[in-house]
Length: 400
Image 1 (spheres, rainbow, N blue to C red):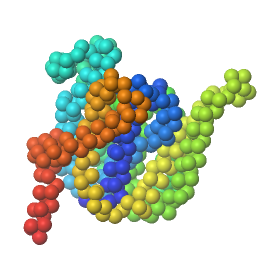
Image 2 (image 1 turned 45 degrees about the vertical axis):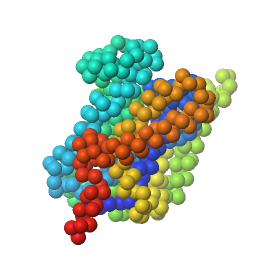
Image 3 (image 1 turned 180 degrees about the horizontal axis):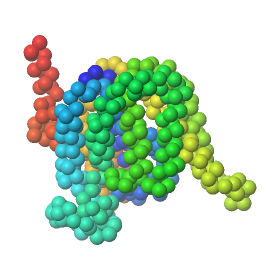
Image 4 (image 1 turned 60 degrees about the vertical axis):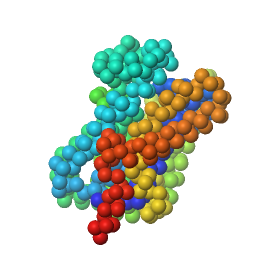
């Protein structure tokens, strides 16, 4: 695989943002989450909206780019097998071992689950439907909560492996080179696709993270995942995103300003305003257009500036690159259980979130550093190779 320091660094920052975002979900007013603090704030909606339109798309885009840099086309069966092992094993382990504390805390907090984690776990492992509204995913008997990304990524990866012989033809490569070379096509085509999905599919298939029937999210995330694979292997693409990084930044800021401005307008307009008499489809189209333009231009901006500033061998990067997967699997369970313990203490709107975020980061660090990365049999369960990175490095240096 061709290592790209900027892609590795962007992946680290994207998952760090995910931890911060999920912590903030406990405090943003009027947004659903598995467990909410008593100290919620409406103003948090604005920074959350600013990042939540592209944060998961960025992860799927990076995943597609990483596969392109891996160049697995000549060994597709091995590639599919390794990706299945690295994605499905942690997903199953996470669903049965890491995630259960989340539905337990959620169910106890809402009064639908009796206290006693051991008893809950034995019932949970039977994978039978729970009483209605016990927790998110009660109807399935088991939940993957934040690990849904692994299930979606596995499906997209296997579909991509099947399509690779077609996507590697000269016709497709020439077409992608043409798209990468043209700023209009590079911005316009993915934007148009994302706009089509949000207009056509989102009203019919709202996001569920349940895999089956989640057609809007599949269309959106599969589009950016495929774009990452197709464009990430084109040298011209990287030249173009660097050259366009200021243009795409201004486009992204204009689009999000347009999007947020429409939200503000909807809140401040008087009930008798003539603007409220305008047809609803007019306003809806503006919201969906600005949202779609923002998503794609923000992604291009992040890649462009990332290539400029992050494509260098930072000393912290190898450790953080390996730590991403365990931290991703652990973080939301730590958030939920820590909030479950902190909430009755009534620590106030500042101390509680500080302790929650600090405890989540500290817990991820300690569990990963002292347990996961040092235990050979645990490492594959958290998406890591069985041999610790340090051991592989020492052996490689000795062999040389």
